[in-house]
Length: 522
Image (cartoon, rainbow, N blue to C red):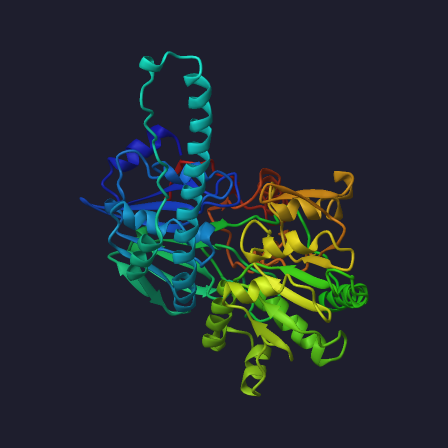
């Protein structure tokens, strides 16, 4: 719609729906969309997702809302799921003056009660480290400058400290804004605005968001996928069918890729059996080998634990001692148990039979740091450690990597996407993309060089995102084409790839929005 057409519509007195794409446009993270519903002299403003921007953290310290709008102008928020790139900006919004409700599923609310305070703690830690580094640099520079200046010319230096985006306490306060809603029920949120959540099959509590905006002949429907999962994923219910929407906004994380179609359990069993054989030969100093599995605390870790339990129960791998060394993983797994009704029929059947899907025969949960540190001591038998983060960008798993990477009897198994610049990416490197060249023989951890002698393995089978074929199959069940389809949440190649696939197969109108681009939904 041209600027002149927008102006005519605004002056017509008709209801108007305006959408501002403020994040995850041309990028994977930072999901943030502002809707403004104008009806007569009243306007309702709400945000669809409030995610942190991983690719450019500085963006979250800037005003992400359109010029002239404040956080206090937002009436309410809708959160598709608990991953921080869709939810983690909420404490900042509350800190800036937002007082409305944040609507989401109950499972997402329970996960955010764990994840948001942890995010606040990490924000504080990042600010603390940045300030320490800046102070050291200023002290070094000042020392060099002062050595060349007369003593009576010296001036005190003011240090501007970096503030965290939000604190742990800010995050805890934002939990008061959470307003859980049930799946598959139409909920009226405001005059002329209703929402219905349906299963997304991505992580526990994830929802495809179906909006109704307007009334009568002026009502428009808007479907937002958030992040959606692959068919027949372990633990979770499948992505629900959506029959129609006037407008669709879809993720495109794998918009130009297809997942491997293979037996995930057989691949995992082969890797574990090989790792176990390496681990049997003890090192004189470091003992038996260790299998390290960095896994995201929500979703990925639970799937891996379930798979290892099944393989051990079927005697396809040895029943080795397993240590879950991540307090967030332990707490998130407890939330999965609490929401058994949201899991798939197979997993519910296990629970009814008294089988814990997330517990192997010899499993220990390490809540205290002392228990974690003990895992780096020489081991008397092969063990498995499951910890977070999944990209080895933080958490206790990093210390274990520091201790175990130099030993050839050890194995590190990565089970998901590794972001550019992370330790995981440096280690996986050529193992995912042979064209990347020689695999890293040395990495830096906490400022020190660490030799990489351990066996590095990678499995992409655990991705929680639908690929382009999955997305096209889901869209193909629409009974009528949307007026417009918006493609977000992807690298540029993935965005353009999915756009091309949709246009070629479905002949839909597709747009790849730019950051801060505005659309009138007529």
